[in-house]
Length: 417
Ligand code: NAD
Image (cartoon, rainbow, N blue to C red; front, side):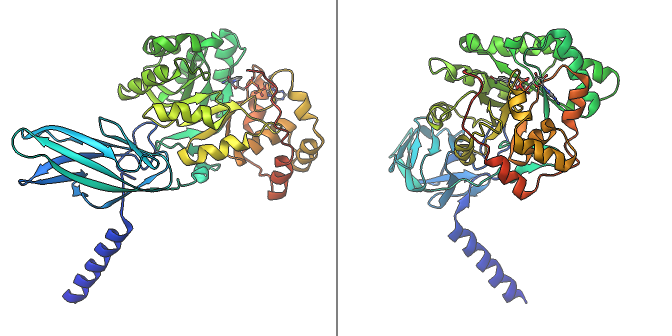
């Protein structure tokens, strides 16, 4: 029996060794981080050996598996004998490493990173880690339409249907948010530039005061406007104050702005560490190239991208690109936006499907968003519409209907911003 156990243990350790080490899948649940991101600690051991610790395990000379787009960070354990550590990537095409030890997995393939530890006394010692960059896991299955939530790439849960507040006054926003929370919504979308964060905050407070919701049960999104990108920290503090909240569930940059959006994003990363923001993301990045420009310059992978998305502009290419990062698409103008809704509501296919389910066109479109893996935030100041838009969890579009909806894509945007 003992021998059998020993053989089984040996076999298991061989399997683990052969399969390599998958960094931090459970270890890192920090905001915005990809699931294969993790922290590694460099330590000197004995006279001439370097230990690389992942948790308590020494993984020097073992293979680390990283998903494309993910990052791991090396840091040095407090050790009086160490003077400095330098990192060098042997295959920059697949993996890059910064001076401070941030490793980014760029392309699927195998690479080595050399680590040299200079000691205060005696010779420098050197070791390497082998890194295998693998294709990222498709996390689109993270949508749970029974619970009405999606698991973001940082492990947090986000409601998949929310209330939008674009063009609403403070008073209208207060009412819409209050009605929405009363009707079961748990996601709210606003922005500094809408000028209604104060009203949104009041609507939330009203619902909390009446015992309809607790703060922890709702998910509040706001956006940093482009004029504020050079002063990100004060923009974040301003939104917190106007909303009357001590943390924001998700803050996103309102638009791509290559001059200074990286600076603004870094201010949000700092606010995540301080607990002011729980998740961070982007809005209005329309090409994979532009999205990657930002992602490659920052540490936290965006949890979400909010772009114009509806049946006539389904954002398929962008969604395909986002898969490698586990970044989820959120649709603004989910119903086509003010002034365009009738084009979608009167679309023959949508009308036919609506009739079959005894639902309205708006409900069919919103249901399609969720089944297609988009978070939707329809905007309204009309109490009845708000209620109607939430009644989409009691029916399901068939595979064939989803296909028919998919065929409506014309790659046609209604807005020009
Ligand atoms: P939308 O597609 O949600 O359409 C809103 C229009 O539809 C309004 O005129 C509303 O009265 C009408 N409507 C809503 N429900 C209806 C129903 N059941 N029946 C009939 N009409 C109905 O457009 P939106 O509000 O502009 O976009 C949704 C949200 O996305 C906004 O409120 C805002 O929070 C966000 N947004 C973000 C950006 C961005 O740049 N990131 C841009 C625009 C909007």
